Length: 174
Image 1 (cartoon, rainbow, N blue to C red):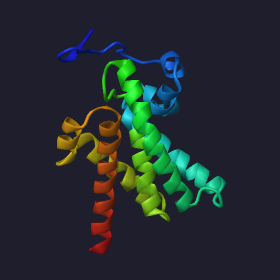
Image 2: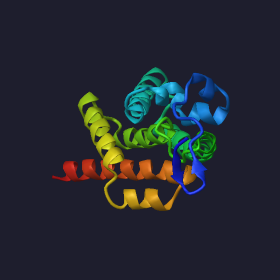
Image 3: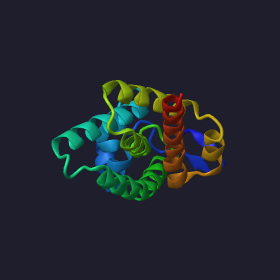
């Protein structure tokens, strides 16, 4: 076992499909399996968000409107706080790398604000979101250190989404 903080230990080093399917919170937190990728799970979760957004919006444009996406994101955020908190507790690590629901919700948020956007804009949004999510520029890193559990897991990625959208707003203004 790995000791993380005094009294906290990791119980599952590498979650698998069996672990994911053992609880509804795990399915959601691990992005329907996209977070189980052995390499760059956060990027795989963001890619899942991108593909699912494009496919759902293209297939059912009258259902998946920006207003509907806003509701999905809001509800998904609240449920995600619970799902990530439960999954983090079961894994023994509050923000385990396999938990990617935070990336999914945050990147859907980016895409909603950039719609309509072509592939190039979506690609650069994907790129910059991943940069901000991985590097955690101030105050994201400080926020992440201060707030743990489900709320901290979900909100630090929303802040990365905000940085991404801010970058695009500045770029468009120039």
